[in-house]
Image (tube, rainbow, N blue to C red; front, side):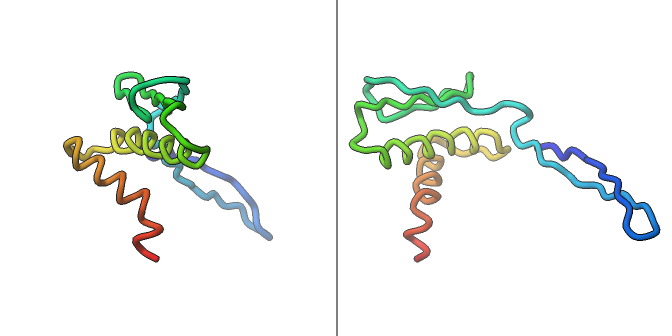
Length: 106
């Protein structure tokens, strides 16, 4: 994660001042690409090497189901961008809890 300072000059009434804002660059320019395929053996997968998610449409029943899979795979990308080290099962459990947090809290 990088903080990028951005200065903004303004004047108010009789004096000039500068404000410094900090923009957070989370991925250092590395976004996540989501691609769709008509057929596949799984619902979706994430490739760490290329920062790419594949969503297999034949494994979904409706549009909401597709949205949930996209969120799931993009969360893999977000977790990869952090400095934490967790195994595959911990990562899947974390993503599950994030996706169901609205229902758990209510």
